[in-house]
Length: 87
Image 1 (cartoon, rainbow, N blue to C red):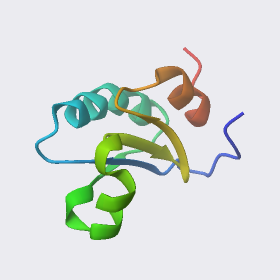
Image 2: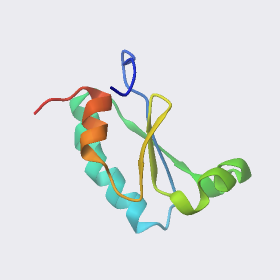
Image 3: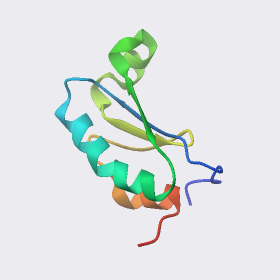
Image 4: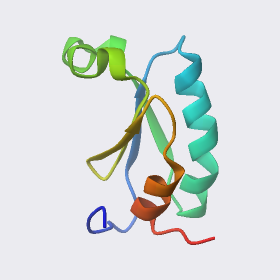
């Protein structure tokens, strides 16, 4: 199990504006986020040197309630588990 679920899951996608993998992950994750009543906050790692140093070559990185779920490609099963979505 990923961890305790908050009332509304906090989903963050760390990426870059020009990154096609980041856009693909956002598009794939949005329907699952909506189903859980959440939205995805997209943060450009290039806007903050600390984020760039942390996530540079890993983007996109998807985080839910502070837990890193996946990078490069969406791990739909992990996101579903984190959001507790059963379809």
